[in-house]
Length: 131
Length: 79
Image 1: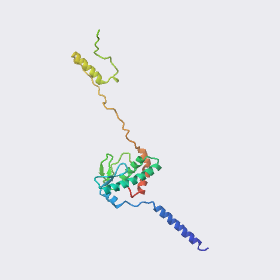
Image 2 (image 1 turned 135 degrees about the vertical axis):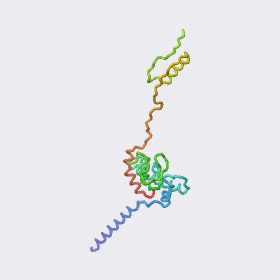
Image 3 (image 1 turned 30 degrees about the horizontal axis):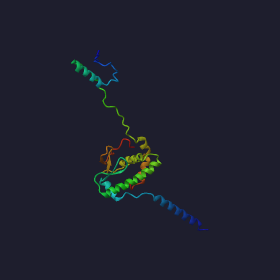
Image 4 (image 1 turned 90 degrees about the vertical axis):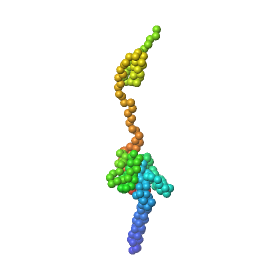
């Protein structure tokens, strides 16, 4: 009888830890080091359509990595676009606007005319429709 | 009796293409050997085209911006 409150506390603590673990579960890991390095080296850049692009050349491993990321992006876009009652292209384009805005100085991005640009310290060249 | 029609009846300026009228005058000039003036009115030769190519509307992008921003933040491994 006297140990009952303790057990309840332990149970509550355990439940809290479990829910914390479940919350932390879906949180994604950070960028793959190879992806991070390719971004920093300007081998890959953010395209206006919301996908990652290879700026120039690129070996098979880089192409595979970019394809892999773009497949994952597309899956996320499709899911979110459906929830937001928008088309995949609309959602991807919006994400592209934001991804270009979030590029770090030195990283590559695609300008509205399709050319690859290096992000400077100022604002990137973006589509006039971008928020 | 053969009737030679040198000039065509005057038509509305809006309907008569200038090139056609000039051609008619040219025929007259050629036939009679008389010099005739051809007044040309410069109308835009290219139709005015309104670009309807923009299939993604700005209002849709603004509506999705917040959601897309959180999507990027929730997936740091692919962005």
